[in-house]
Amino acid sequence: MTDPVSTKPYLIRAIHEWCIDNGFTPYMAVTVDAHTQVPKEFVKSGEIVLNVSPLATNALHLGNELIEFQARFGGEALDVSVPVARVSGIFASENGQGMAFEISATPEGLVTDANSGPAKPEIVPASELPPEESGEKSKKPTKNRKNHLTRVK
Image (cartoon, rainbow, N blue to C red):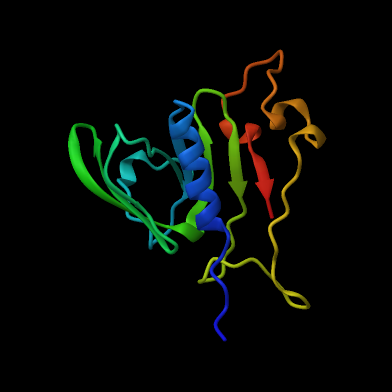
């Protein structure tokens, strides 16, 4: 019997579809490594945030192992390929609602515990998060949109 496919690609597709259905612009945060094909000049601190809306991409494929599409960067059309294991979050740019994921150092992208095997996703209700992480507006502005995401472990 083979191991089941991770829930991560399904959650990414669900948040992407939710954004599109509600007229939001889906953005994907990616932790870049040697297997990530993105324009390196747009990578900051080992991360890149990509607009994955239908208007910004061509031939978008949200697969179980890879996310692939074509997009324009600085006016030049480029192919983008991101392993699902390197996606650290997907969110709506208009309100920051979405989901964050842990990135592991293992080749398969699995977070493992020596005693229990692969980690299971843990979804924390927004009501249990501090206001800046639950998507509620705080009095001070924030530049880092990741603070608005629910972390999945």
